[in-house]
Image 1 (tube, rainbow, N blue to C red):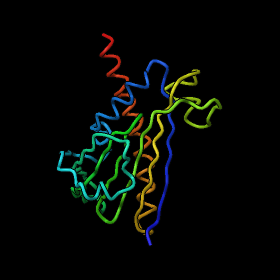
Image 2 (cartoon, rainbow, N blue to C red):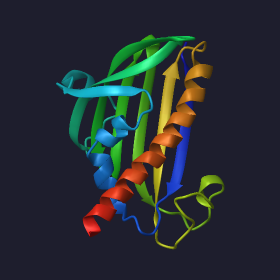
Image 3 (cartoon, rainbow, N blue to C red):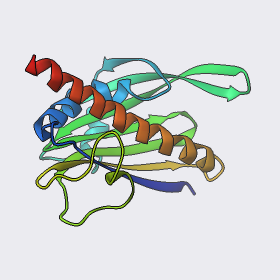
Length: 186
C-alpha cells in the first residue's frame, strides 16, 4: 500500500507584483518545470488523452492541456548520478495551473498552483517576513498544494527532498514573474 504526503505552501505576493502577472507566468507552464532543481531538460510530447480524460484531477473548466517528458539528474548512490525521465501533464485552470507527474520508482505527484485573494487574518510563518514582503490589504497569495504518493520505504527521502525543492521553486517562479513585470515597465 502506498504512502501519501500533502504539502501546502502559501506565499504572499508583494504589492508591486500583480496577480495577473503571476497567473500568466504559471500558465506559460515552462517555469513550473524549469525551476525544479534536478531538471536537465524537458520537451513537449503528445498528450495521453485517455489518461487525462479518465483522471478526475484534470478539470472540465480547465484549458490548454500540455504533456512533457521531463529529464532529471538524480543521485542513486554517493557519487553516482543517473538521468531519469518521466511524463508530466499540465493543465491551465482559472487563476492557476495543475500538474500530474509519474516519476520512476512509483512516485506520483499531483500539484496545483493558484493565485487567491489573501485571507483577512494573518497567516503565520513565511507570510510575515522574507524577501517577498509583508501584508498589504487587498493583495493576493500564491498557494501551491502538492500530494505525493510512493512506497513507504521511499517516502522519507521523497518527502524531505520535495518540501525544500517546492519552497525554492515557488520563490524562483515569483522572482521570474517580478522580473517579467520589471522588464514590461521599462
